[in-house]
Image (cartoon, rainbow, N blue to C red; front, side):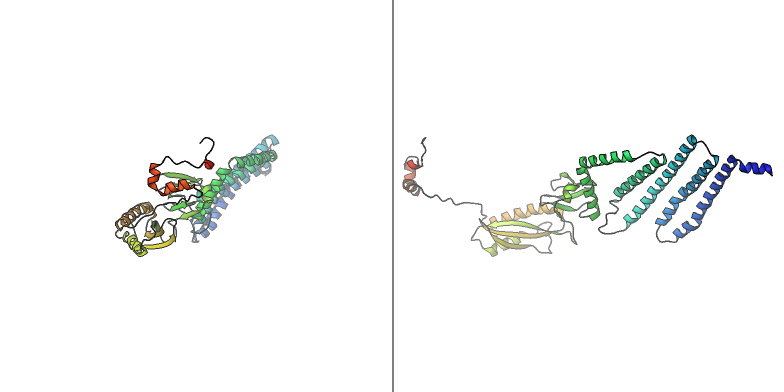
Length: 377
């Protein structure tokens, strides 16, 4: 009996018993999770809780086991020079275990939320990698902070330095950060998608070939791919020609004819140009609009509709050629810009020469009156 009591009082025996008990307790906790939480999660309609339960099973087992080992080390009453590093190592290992588990749980939750089709949500399938990286950075930063606390490292000076470096980094990378956040908002709001035809500030027009976090690539009708920073797109007026309920769009051909032309004849000629023209839609039907008395002629517009934005340039080219040929065939004059010049205060002798072309040919070269000539004349 005394031998048994001596064994029980032995710190090594107590530590061994605690470790064995912690292994048994960890196994029982894991078994309880499988018997209760896993079965309860299996009855739900979603598999998110099943994945979370599967992720936390092993970390819970290791947590109970490490807690038992830490208790056993306290029983052994080791010297501080050995006990403190061992305790810090145990805490570090525990932090790493739960950091890995947290990243897995975060990925499961982010994927579940991104899979839901929700409008105007920043978390979507396209933005999932960005939020996943941000989540991992936060977990790693938090884990490093607690590791430093576990090893009794003073972070005051480090945090002050990090703040200064953060401000300097923010100023140095402000354009990159602007593009990054603009890319996130573009992916979240979805003003356009790949294969859409867009127009930026009524200047750059093309097909979207790639949407990235930093920039967007646009293929112009000239088959030139342009990379536009997302910050520029975020601050620009954006026209999505492919957006809306229908992809069809209107194409306007500006036409000018001389004053005195028959308006009804001009309309008939313009509408005749659309007969058998490629790529044009029958509904809505082509139409004309007489919208302005211009400086040099009567301003008309020929409206036609197309189905696909990528054929716009070909339609403009074809319809412009058809209109020009049809107006020439109908002997309808196409005006050009001209200006009338009025001269006041001209000398009588010069005015007489200008009015009589014969006199102008036979006379000496025109010379300005003496009051209009300079000293060198």
